Image (cartoon, rainbow, N blue to C red):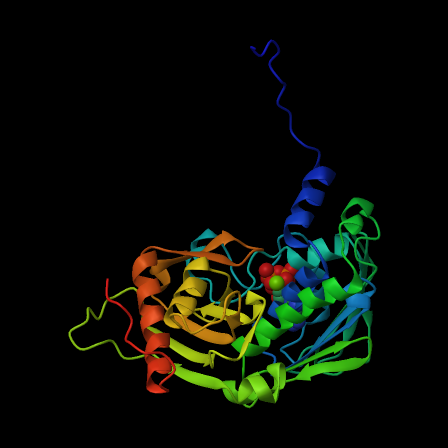
Length: 353
Ligand code: ADP
Ligand code: MG
């Protein structure tokens, strides 16, 4: 059959565009937690507490001891496309901070009741600001300690379609827990606490070492089975300008596994990413030593030259693509394999090629 009528192409109205954009950034409580946590880390916090109620659907509070904001900063922070982190297109190539799009607070404020209290660490008074369904109130003085507290209540109260897609409190909390866990593991020098319905789920010390962080997050049984991976040194005669600078972290004994792959965490240049290439590379290193459908714990940091990886595949999904997928995969498998081999946990070195 043939198309008899040409569909008309028209521009979407602003409100629709904003709501579509909001859905891209904020999908569920865990995405709010991710954005707020990134802001706290970008603000140089050494202590961050994430407290959620009802899986995060009822409420989310993120408190940090970071640089804080002045009254003027606060007002600007919730406007659209405002950021203190880049000044123009040229900076986009060299983003060092986690956030840079300047849309998270604005977007969260459009689909919830958002309250921010902040006081600059460098001195000055505290202030607070509330945004309800996209409408910002007045900035008023607030007695708060240095740093920032962001509270999000009634997420999606004004977007029932999106609210309907939320799962049970347990499932939503699982997602929140996963996000906070990844950032806690990626930042052993930041004391990270997670609370759910008033109960502490975990609290890392922030002492800087990965071992105590893994102990706090995953418990003693898992922590005591972890094996150090240190693939920092390139092999003799290897191309020093190869696509992988180092592979380091911890992986579990092949008998310490879970049924899901969510405990297999990979970080590229310090950023948590989901990458099939990295996951498969780790699993390959275990050879046949893992039981069917069982996955090890891993906290693995892969450092690559910034131009060898594309981290902007999708801002929400945290996916990355490498220029040379095969070489990255091989380097990761080799590093993990060597660690397991040293412990006598696998039989032979990784097959070459
Ligand atoms: P982005 O992180 O992309 O810049 P956001 O909407 O997440 O955009 O935040 C806007 C701005 O608000 C940030 O650039 C920062 O200046 C400020 N801000 C947000 N959260 C915090 C925080 N926890 N501590 C200090 N400043 C913050
Ligand atoms: Mg941000």
